[in-house]
Image 1: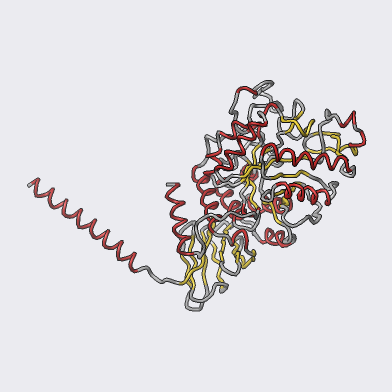
Image 2: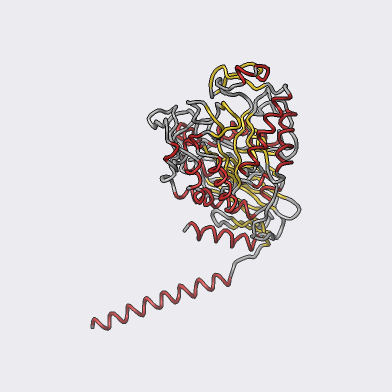
Length: 485
């Protein structure tokens, strides 16, 4: 059924859009759909690196590795993701299973595998048209890093964050430190073939260093891209850099974790930074699970996720999904979830929803390239559109606790809306108004085409088929009665 559904969506798009269904390669990072993997907590693919593993200790290594990721590339591809974002794979101290306590930027962490494993991952991912990027942390290093004792002028004090207290901070005002980090980033790209980085920064990270980092990796690999995580002070960065929108994350969590909240604050937040490419996420390895937020609000996690994903995928940003969200996983507490991914369980309907949205996003370039425009709201139901010179798509999300209708004249006369999720068709009334109705807690994505009226050919075909079926049943019934007599 999953494959049939995707084929049907593609069939609809063929006749409602003027764009080819052939996926076009692009250097625009907006087109990516990112799947974030915490290496140690994903899949254990090799026993060769299972030393000091203790699955009973939440702070110890649990055995996930690069080989485990390779074994799940088909799974990732089938969900519609286009980029794999790895947690840091550089050498970490003993309790740094998460990768964020780096003690040597230029050495591979043995618990995760070898450089050859990363090379194999990237090669196989590229064969499947998947990109691979990895986290690069410049906000702090491990207290065990050699810089702390051997190159004190490379350290600029201490910081505390979710990864530890009093962590040494690299001195990014020191040109030698900058060059070391930039050369390290290029070296990993040369050795492994990765396609870019997710650069972890904070309010003390110089903006010119971020720009310099981006320029360096672009010069090394023109098709690479950079995401920046932690630029919460909103400092402008160079064009082409994806900045994770923390404020939008907060608004999405508040609005979408339960029914009855208007989506207008999301569009207001969107407009505050329209000049930057956005990384859109609703949970990750540093936040509580969105599933947990929904449960806390007594919402249905599957329903909540569908609405959140519709907003994430149908806006011109880069969606970032944390491993296990497709299940959807829930650790039962309002803390980050670093358990092993439970990939063999979950809701098939939700997994198929990911695939449908990814297919629609891929086949309609206006979603990633167009301008987002808020149209109207009725209660907690909102309508917005994405448009460019060639194409237009409308998205309706009803986050209300009851059925709602939005009436609009925004659609051109003589056109109709064709739903891609629920097969809804909306035509203009005599007064030229379009009445878009949705059941509670549902969404629909509409393409625009000429009003074809009633499809009499299809209706006639259905009548003939049904008529033939009825005649056949009656014939068999009469025949059986005659046999009995």
